[in-house]
Every structure is written in structure tokens, then in C-alpha cells.
Image (cartoon, rainbow over all chains, first blue to last red; front, side, top):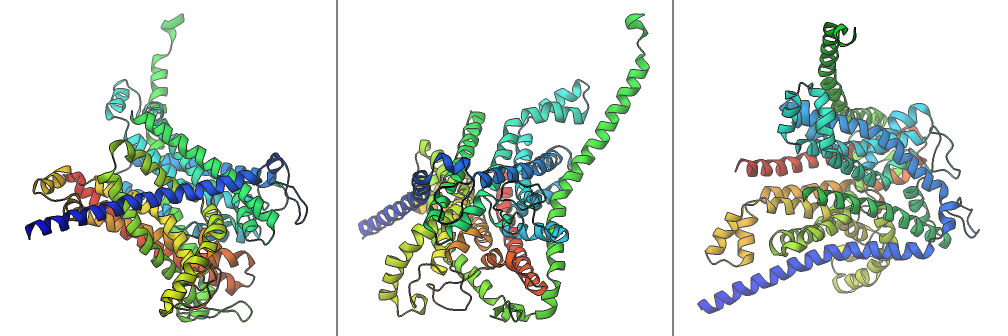
Length: 280
Length: 321
């Protein structure tokens, strides 16, 4: 009787642990499946024309996404130009100057903001910029992307500045350096790898964002025409081409996905490489 | 001449003013930037609220109970979209929670030391893939697979349940739920892994010393200890699932009706906004879509607040020990 109870416990243990191994296997297999399939499909439709040529109308062979690649880079640039100063300064406040109660409120709000659906951010940018100005524009999309990027930059900047030991701040103060100079000259250089990591994570996050662009950037058949004009972007084009009935367009969607995924992969692996070196 | 003639007092005054100015203004400046984060959040809810007024005024509560969405007659009801959002998120949780918790147990309790960090990295990579690419994969790989064998099998074997009735389209609630599950597995896994890692080893050792098996240790000593962290992780995943847009829009098929069938094409709040916002012409149409966005924002806000409080409370308890 005791023997049987013991065996039962042993088998329950084995089966459930097996299921846990399987669960981890499933999660990793999903990544490899999606990543592998996209890379495989993408590279077979990818060629030099794809990055050097503009899009061609349906039915004409060839053509590429030069304009959309440039558009995505411009949107990332606008988003970063807004989000990096705001995120970094907020991070400095949270880590160096904030009083405890206000700090925890702002940190909480930043976390909530990063969980806000990106489509809602798009509607917000539409309501405050596109609608009053009566025009879809590159910079309204940049603002939407910045809103998504700010919490990422702020929280990672804060956390990496907190890791700078207090003795370094004290040493700076003891030398007669003022607080703000010690932040700029000691704390930020000490935390710079973490700050850069946060910025890269933010860029990776906004590079593939599509939902906030639909009714801000809108998409465009032409290249860059000014910040106050609609602009094309890779993720928008993937969406449009994927849902189109034309074979050539669907193939181009895979090629565009290939570029986007390579960009995200490079950033993620670099970030991991940097943070591993830092912890050693 | 030379060094002796330097105006020391002047330099001192200059320095004092300069440094005082710096120490006075710089913290305030950083505070202003930090306030921007709060302004964005408050601004979002205010602006959406104002923009939604025409729809709120016209439809009142019937916005939430009507199943009609007609741009020509300008009648808008959100019930099917709300229903679709809940159904697809529910399917996602049913699939993602066991997988994620299993994976988290693997990462904290079972995996050999050298494997933990690379395995965590791979699972978190899944979250880095842009939504639109997951949608692309979903549309061309998952949807055909769901159409047959999955839906045809479910239809012929479990077709007596109203859940599995109707023609197997492939696109629909089931595909959307599976895609959402894939997208929330990384976050639930990562947060629950952190929660389990925070459980002190003494808990495990005590249980093992009593002769418990590994699973008994996990289920009786580890999981109860970090339960609020795990619940927080699941709710955080729910928040992501509710608001996820692109991938869902691509595989849910854009239907608009209340039905018990999981095979049926449907819509979520987010997919409705994504598909129709740039084509909305009239004021009431736009206001109705903005009201949808407002509903989505408030719901995800509340869900995220609950999740954060649960996760934070747990980590705070841990920090005290």
C-alpha cells in the first residue's frame, strides 16, 4: 500500500515535469518556427532591387521598397529625437532627484503607459495632431512612436543609473563638484551602457510598430516629401501587401518582413551581448 | 601681473552663481520632463473622452448593447467587438497560461544552469518580433493549418458543441486566440519566472528535506509563495492580449456578429479601429471609433493597474526578507 502511494507520487512528478519541459520546448519551437519561416521565405524574395527601387504598380514585375525603408528610418529618427531627451531626463529625475512618493507615481504611470495598446496611442496622435492640422503627416507618426518609446527609455535609464554606486556620487561631491555636474559627469557616464541599451530596445520596439502609423503616417506611393506629408513605412507596407490578393505583393511583404526581422534581431542580440559583458 | 592679478573674488562669485543656477534649475528641468509621462497618460484619456462625446451623446448606453455597425445609417454598437475581444483573449489565456507557467517552472526549477539564460533569451525574443510579422506568418501558415486539420477535425468530432459548429474558414476567433497566445507567452513566462526566482531557496530545501518530490516542492512550496506574482503575470498577459492589434486584425477575418462558434470570423475593438479609422468620414463614425479606443484604453488601464499592484506587492514582500 505504501509502495503504491510512493509510485503514484513518483509518476505524477515525472509526468508533470515532462509537461514543463514540453512547455518550454513549445515556446522555443514557436520562435524558431516563426523566425525560420520568415527568414526562409524572405530571403527567397529578397534581392538588391528590393532596397534600391521604388514600388511598382500591380502587374509589373520587380520594384522594391526603397521609399518605405527610408520612411521607416525617418520615423524611427523622429521618434528617437523626441523620446531620448524626454526619457533620459525623466530617468535622471526618477533616479537622482525625485522625492519617493512622486517617483513611485511616475514610475507606475510609465509602466502603465508601456502597457497601453499602441492603437490607442495612434488614435491619440490622430486626435491631437492629424485632425487639427487636417493632414496625415510623418511627424504625427513620429510623435506616436515617441510616446511608445519614452517609457522604455525612461525606465531602463533610471534602473541603470541606480546601479551606479553612491560612493561615486559622494566622491564627486567631495571634490566640490555640484550635484548636477556630478550627474552629467559621473552618473551618466557610469550608466551609459545601460542607457544605450534602453534606447536600442526602444528603437527595436518602434521599428516594427504598425498600428499607430495607420492613421498618422497613412502610407504613401512617393518617397519622402516633407515631415508634414504622409509617408510610407515597412510595417505598413507589409500589412497592406499581405492582405492584397496579388502574388507579387505578398512576396514583397515577406521580403520586407525579412529586413524588419533582421533589424530587430541585430538589435536584440547586440543588447544581450552588451548586458552580458556588463554583468561579468 | 600674471597670476596674482586674477580677480579671485570675481571668479568665486561667478562660480557660485553658475553652480547655484545649475543645481537650482537642473532638477526642476528633469522634473518637467518626467511630468510629460503623466501628461501623456492624462492627456490620452481626456482627449479620447472629448473626441468621443458625439457618439456618447447619440448612443448612450446602447453603444454597449447594440450589435449594429452601419456607416450608412450611422448606427454604431460595440457589443460584437467587445465580445470578440473577450473571446479571443480568453482563448489566448487558456492556451498561453499552462505553456507559460510550464516554461517558467522549467527556467527556474528544472533547467541546468548553463541553459537558463539562453532559453530565457529565446523565449523573450518571441516578444521582439513585430506584431505585423507574426500576423503575416499567421495569415499564410497558421490560418491554413487551423482551417484543416484543426477546425475540420474539431467540427467532425466535437461538432455537437455549438463552439465547434459552422464552416471552417480558418480566419476567425480560434486563429486570433492562437496568435494572441503566441504573443503573450513571452511576457507571462518572463514575469512568472522572475516571481518564482524570488522564492527563497530555504522554502524548497525545507520541502525536499521532508521527502517531497520536485513537483510537490514546486506545487506546495514555490507556487503558493509567489501566487500573487503569478496572478499578476497572467493579468499582465491579459492586458497585452486585449490591446494587441495587427496580428489579430490579419487573422480574425473581420466579421461582426455575436456567435458561439469559434470558427466564425469576427472583430476585436482594436481590429475594428485599425480597419475602419482611416476610412471613417462622418463625425459620428469617427467619434464611435474613438469611443471604442476609449473603452479599450480604460479596460487595459485597469487591467494593468491590477497586474502591477500584484506584481509589485509580491516583489516588495520579497525585498523585506
